[in-house]
Structure formats: C-alpha cells, structure tokens
Image 1 (cartoon, one colour):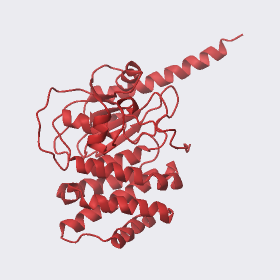
Image 2 (image 1 turned 180 degrees about the horizontal axis):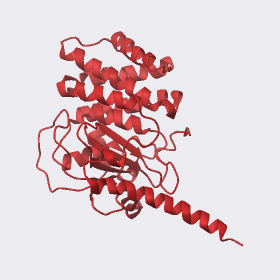
Image 3 (image 1 turned 135 degrees about the vertical axis):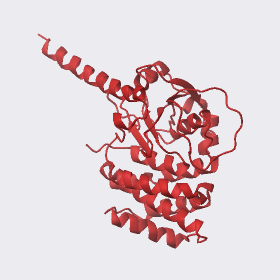
Image 4 (image 1 turned 90 degrees about the vertical axis):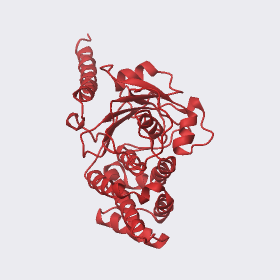
Length: 319
C-alpha cells in the first residue's frame, strides 16, 4: 500500500536506541565506517515526551543502553542551525548487521500509525551510506507525526559513542542529499523509493570514481549520469526535482568521502540492494549480527500480532 508522505508541520525528530560504551575522547574523523559496531544503541530525542514508550517499542528485551540526541547534535551532524532540543522527537535503534549487509533501515509504526511522514527507509539507507555508515541496521519510529529528516543525527552520535567519528562534512552533505530527493520521492511514490535512492547512490559512486581519477564531474556530467541511472531503472522525475538532486550531488563531490576508495565499493553494493528494496522493512532477523538484537525484531512483531488478536477477541466477545 502506498503511503502518503507529507511534511506535517516543522517538527523535527530524533531518537536512537543503543548502548553507550563509555565516555569517548576526541578522535579524528573517519570517512567511512571501518569497524563493526560493538553493540546496539538507543538514542532518545531530547524533546520526546514518551521515552519509556520509545524504549519499549525499539528495545522490548531491554538489552540496549541509551544516549540522548539534542539540537546541538542536529547542528553538528546535519547543519540544522537553530533547531531546539524540544524539536528532537523521533526514535532510532542502531544495531550491528552481518558483514556485507550494508545499511538496512526499518520504519516502525507507533500504535498503528506511520509517524515518519516524509522520509522512506530507502532514503535513510542512501543518506547513511553517503555519510560513511556501513553494516548497520537502523530502526526509526516516533510517537507523533514528524518529517523524520533529522533522525540520522542520532545514528551518527551512536557511532561516535562507539568510537567511529564520521566527518561532519560528509554527514551534512548526505543529509542535504536526503532533503534534495524529497520532491522526486513524492513524484515517484513509495513503490519506487528503492529505485530512486539506488539511482542516486549509483550516481554518487560514479562521481567519487571520477574524482579519484582526477576528473571532477561538471554540472552537465552529473545531470547526464543521474538521468542515465534513472532511465536504467524506469524512473521519471521533473526537471525541478532533478536539478535539486544534481545541486546536492555537486556538494557531495566536494565532501571528503568522495575521495574515499572504500566508499565506491560500499556505494555500488548499497545501490544494488536499494534497487531491489520496497516498503518500510529492509532488514529481517537474519540480517542482525547478534541474536539478541534479532530477538528485538521478533518481539516487536509478536507484540503487534498480540494486539491484533486482542482486538478481534474483543469484537467477538461483544454482546
């Protein structure tokens, strides 16, 4: 079923489920994630008024520890200047995935509602990959309707807590690209979210490949590359939507990650996975590295079906 994703007010949300491994010293930024995430994380948005509900939803087994993400983190990682702590609302769990899985994203309903109104699972996966994230499973939810555009700030903070400090220039460029795909996403619909995000990721890989060979791509080059990748996946978008993406890709070309050799391979693999992905659930239990994290997914599903069973039992018991 295709869901309508529209921006519902200016409510920005972020909460990430995870475990804080201890206070980290200042470390040099890295271009791509090279070490496996050591544990699952929960990052709770500072403006979320149902933190207990978020933990129950994203960490039903109670195995993950938590950290908090606030407006200053949104500014640091995503260049969201002027965002207040109270505006950071949505919740995200971050867990290590099987090696070679890439970035997998699940969008979880909250009390039956799709509260992430604007961003698809595939857009999140695309942006996280372009920021340097690799082999993690991210679950996003919110207890109220939010655009979801700032949710990745919590992911990046969780990685930093785990010892992987991604370059802020990369995370900002990646989030700019996430925002730049918004119009195109609304045009192609949710059923084509994977093909759109995969096409953009393929284009980013080509940009990085050319740059590392000493051939930076012009606006015209990037436009042609994007159009070729979109056409290969039977995706049609408006000129205006195309121009927004191209502009963001030009910014990406100047980000440090475009000079990372490992990024090219990661992006190509992620693009292939994205183009075969549909819907809100990219990760399954077998994709988790740790069985405890996988059991959370099963517990979430069990809780959902238990509610359905109780609902129908109530109907049949009515006189």
